Image: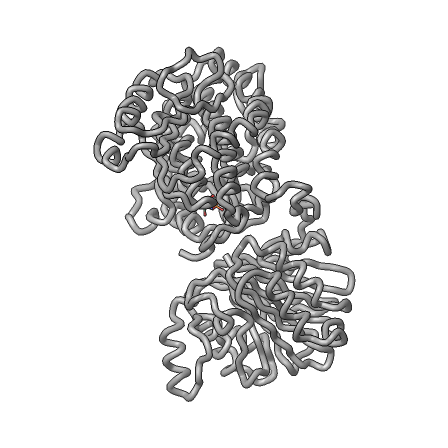
Length: 613
Ligand code: M6R
């Protein structure tokens, strides 16, 4: 949520900052800004409402060519508004101390109102509605020539989350950065140092990175990095090697990142499964579960926490743990977890599911569960992310960078790994060798099953064409397909702005069926499963009220008479089928959004990684 990039080195900072912003734009894109520092210290700020392209136009219009290359230090920001509308005045960087310093910020300063009131009483005139300006001015109040000290003193008075980068006119070539609750990663180059809220912005410049810890304040110059922890003690943080390539964060010829990521799923799921299937013993090998078989045998309950798409993946996992491992499993919304006195203890395994590994609510749930003595594992995509580091153990899904705001390959990777975990726990309990082996064989086929769905892209696009003018849609499923229905509805609503609801198929008649009008699309997950007859009955009830039925059916299934449109998924185990079905619904949402002319990778009002509560 909000993207930050900073540079200090010996090259012109402007193209590096704008290039970084373009890579970070998926984190927020309602306004953007940049501050450039010339070698003698002078700061020039340009801010614009809208996307980075708009900022670039404005920079080119306002800054003469010489000024564009003079600065070798700078900070930049792309915003997802929390406090105050997306206006130029609210865009970052925010200046303070009569323009002697400026700051970019990701996160929320929760006590900004009292800080603002205090400063206004002292005569400060605020120019924006943001919490960030309060922090900038607070640093300005403390600033007497030592920027690091001023930042430390100001941060000691703030509550909330922040990742910040600050420049001061009289400290040219020095960038002070700090984090608490919002990610910041340093990039170490040859005679240059970068900072970003996301490693994707660094990969074109360096692969050597340092992930800052919560509470760290770092002073960066072209040749040095000085990190102090929350107790002001100098720290040597580990230098990690980025696994990313620059190509992984490019569209690679696809019209949208979302489409690229949908098409990457045979490979990303293969990566999630790689080295983890044990065909002989009919089980999964998951070193990241990290716990001895004895400890795993003692687990009495699994609690899966996450938000959005990750929550839906957890809901599929709930079925898998109960079915395969005979384990009591429940899904809890991460946002609620720490506020409801969760009854969690040492016999509980809490699985924190997150693509980004930075979602504030999921992170808070991790901390709460750890404090209560549960075994906490992460199911994360981004290596080096806060949840991955704070859980310290867990399983990566290895999906590669997911840039599109709408999550696709993360969902299928999460479900694949949850099935592996359930298999592993099941084989340690009562799951038979025979069923274990059968499941391993099914899971091994997953990349091929996904290919078969992708091969129907044109057919799915035709179904989408018949849905594209609808303003409302319903998605229905039972059993493990219920969360897939929720996910299908989420995909459609977030990228196409069609109002879509996912329901358990049996729930329609308890109220929502009143919303059906002739022609309303109802997408029914009617794949081979023990509950198929019931699903068809529920679809009939909708059809009888004039709904248009789009059925997701299993290849070879006997023909039904009620579907107006059919999307075929390959025959496989009903738990495994959640993955090809989800891929089909991703394509459906994608094509509806494309036909409606929506901004697919950057839907309105959203941002990729939600680092505020
Ligand atoms: O990074 P996370 O998996 O923790 O993110 C959770 C949600 O914010 C995310 O899945 C969101 O719902 C996506 N936009 C869905 O496509």
